[in-house]
Length: 164
Ligand SMILES: [Zn+2]
Figure 1 (cartoon, rainbow, N blue to C red):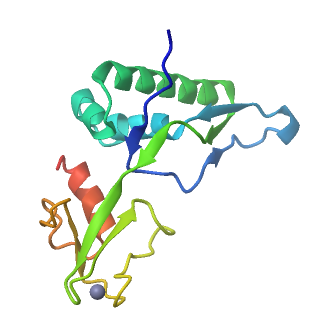
Figure 2 (figure 1 turned 30 degrees about the vertical axis):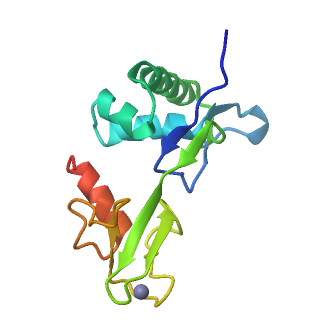
């Protein structure tokens, strides 16, 4: 009995989705496909170094499910590196976490997905264009340790890397 897979929450959509080994002609190149939630699993566990329990919670799935996704992701990455294959990130069953922001200058509140815009491009208040804003939670309270953020996204990433 197999049920359709549940949606997983992801906070990150990669801007670059195709990674190719150098020196392999296109026609000989084999591809390994990593889903967006598999990449998210590796990002949370291996890049941010979170516990599996915390990773599972952030993605809204059980710990065994998280473990299965992580294991599949690591195997695919290993296959690409060892076998000299291209790695493509696409598809999956996921929903993007929305973040909420509040403008200090005009009081406007808005939602934006993560990883929006090119790197280095700062978000700005859609109403007044100010970059004097911070990230808030569902209730509009300042997001922990992000109250001084000028670039809410970068600041949130730093918080996460510091273990929140
Ligand atoms: Zn504003």
